[in-house]
Picture 1 (cartoon, rainbow, N blue to C red):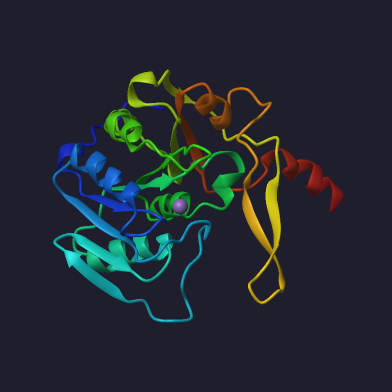
Picture 2: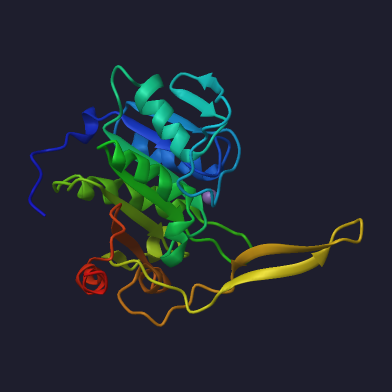
Length: 261
Ligand code: MN
């Protein structure tokens, strides 16, 4: 990518959102990262947790916006709703120049990308022509989470990403590893991977004795694929993965055209 014509971060209006909701601890980490970069930081986030809602929109009911303070609002909708309400309504006169989504409570690696509301907020930003970055912090199996790793390294990741031109529809997915801020082994640009394990389905019975199934987490983040987001974070590196919205599988265009010729 070419060197940018200069994206002035200190003058940028930053929109902070997430999928864990306006009261999530990771949102505080995201705001700290944003405030290290610019004074013009706006928080417009879902009022309740919206994890794994992907790129969904709320179309069949009204949206309620609640003001929590200066430059701080919740929307009773999805992350995508928040970005749309921000850019087309709350910030319509002067839309954000940069969307930062997260920091998510837990990884968004490999196949997570297709479920993630955190990444979907960045997708919506990209669709609206705004530079957009999703951030996620890996969590330990016992639920512990080290927000300090992202808070320490996040601003530098954003600064570096702003030094290059962004093609249309680019969004960037950043995952912070489990280790503490001093143990980070590097910042690695890598592709989206795939876990070796499957998602868990837990069987149980509700208090009324009725059977239920509950979709759980992946058994592990293990992968046999090198040079992926999963491999990088497993080695203590910050994974930086460029994503785009064109889902076309280009290698199949010609063979499939042959099938229908
Ligand atoms: Mn989440």
